[in-house]
Length: 119
Image (cartoon, rainbow, N blue to C red):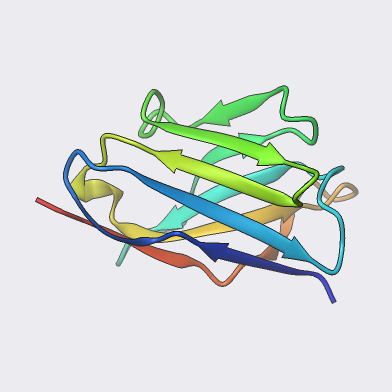
C-alpha cells in the first residue's frame, strides 16, 4: 500500500522558517509529479508548489513565490518544501500529493501537517 507521510510542521514566529518533508512508502515517487497544497481554516485547498519527476521544473503560487522552495530527493523517495519569511497568512494544514500519470489529478495524498505562524 502506497502512503505519503508529511512531517516538519509546527509553530513558528513571523519571519521564521520551516522545512516540510513528504516521505513515500510502498512505491517509488521518482516518476511522479508531486505537489504541495495547503488548506487554511474556512478556506479551500490551494496548490502552492509543484515539481516535475526530475526536479527540473517547478511551479509556485504567487502567494509563496520567492519564499518557498520545493525540491525532491528521489533516492530518498522524499519531497521537501522549504518555507522562509513565513507570515501569519501561511497558517494552514499542508499536504503533499502525487499526480496520477493517466488522469492528471492528484489522487494520492498524505495526512497533512499543521503549520501555525504567530505574529
